[in-house]
Length: 269
Ligand SMILES: Nc1ncnc2c1ncn2[C@@H]1O[C@H](COP(=O)(O)OP(=O)(O)OP(=O)(O)O)[C@@H](O)[C@H]1O
Ligand SMILES: [Mg+2]
Image 1 (tube, rainbow, N blue to C red):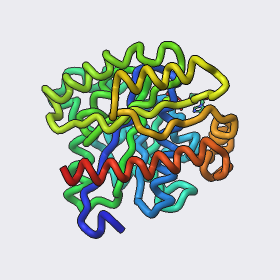
Image 2: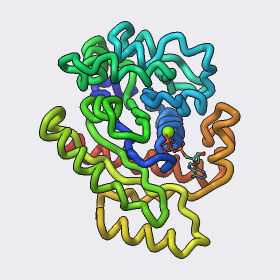
Image 3: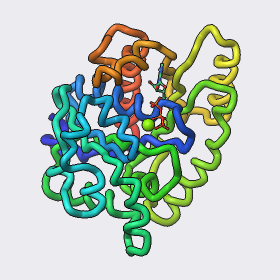
């Protein structure tokens, strides 16, 4: 597989400080789609809500090591990564302990680099993953900053609704600040429009507006609103496993191939 052949591990942070826009759904299904095409994928759940962990079927009682341990530097990426029911897909789950982390390390130098350092160490050890997807909380707090400092690029889910662009400039400004201070090579990987409802005229207008504002940063693939996608987490399964044929699953599979193509362009550049 690719990492064995010497390809570097690619780290993509999924961020938007707006709540409920599809970050976790994208982390779960995109990682599953990448795993299905033989990429070894890792989801890092950086949200104390732990929705990515639950959605990938990791019981609360089984989260003995978590992102909290990694950020406290008491566990390595290799130690904390757990297999999921999806072949090729692992997760470092989160727990509510993460809520206290910001306070616990508030005065500590290099606190924004905890995740970057852990991933760097993992790479030096001999990376076990081709893709790492980091699921962020709906906030621009220290957890999200750690994720941005650690990443090669940022993927932003935007919900197809009237206020879609609201908050995007703040997010892009934060990316710019992180680039200036913590991570000069951070890229905007792309913007994925989520929960598109074709029956809604407004949604089509939102897609046009976002495309005209953000141009080629917007992926061609649009994720439709699809009830099967929203049902899947309650079964602890990615939608792609729950119902591979549903339009939402198919869109995430298509997004994965678009991402691979973009990756080729980015790494060749
Ligand atoms: N394509 C879709 N079709 C239908 N429902 C969806 C779709 N994508 C996400 N949802 C539902 O919308 C809700 C919010 O999605 P999700 O949890 O992925 O967003 P989030 O940005 O991670 O939220 P938070 O900011 O709280 O972490 C969830 O109930 C999810 O199941
Ligand atoms: Mg989430």
